[in-house]
Length: 66
Length: 226
Image (cartoon, rainbow over all chains, first blue to last red; front, side):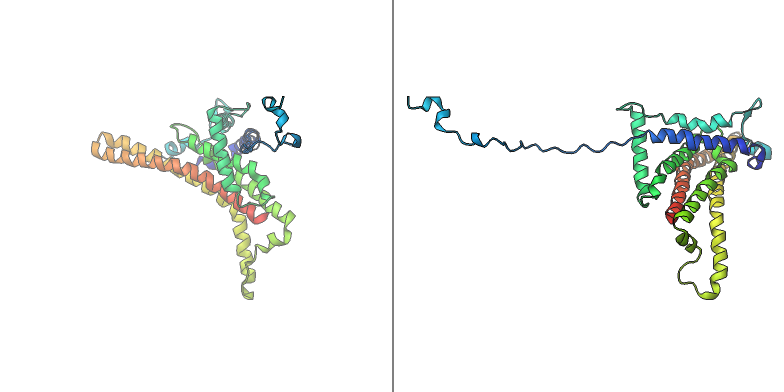
């Protein structure tokens, strides 16, 4: 059975070690799996200018009693 | 007849040069490295498959066991791609070589056992004696457990070698029988050809399954020891 011929064992094992532990691991280590994109809020944030909360008469020029 | 049948398992040497190195490294060409931000379809599909497999396989491990993720993934890719490429006609399959499989099984198994010894010495030694054994049976059971521990790498290597070799031999034999029967009786040759087609489908499955089994068992031995 040719698999039991030990003269070739060292070169086979050496090439396997190089392939498995060097080549394949270098390739697989470069794989990256980005995170899923997070959903952002669609609603606009609350405005922080309290003085514009209420329109008063002076903002309507046509309503000024002139 | 004997020499002819096993001739596809001789380690290939071309004019004195061991081209087995090139043959063992060849499957890595099928997996190009991702270099861009958005890669092409082949790399994306392979990345997705690796992610799928790694999630499945590493789910049972804790933090320490998950450091073996790169090793297990490259192991399953190597064995799977080597077995699948071996189904091409006139190709040499490195995983039919007992040397290669022993070279894979023994260091990986020894790594899991030594990891267990270093970090959980008492627990890994406790594996030798299952819980609740009656007192007189203890010496015999320890001997049995020791033997079953040391047979693990041998079984890993021989299982892979024997399965792939036997599959290749069957394909050779049945293909030869189909050819020989064509001159004698076309109907029998047709039946034999159907058997050959079914066998080839089986061999595709076996190629992938053996890769999976090897990696799964290594991961189980790791789970015991982390």
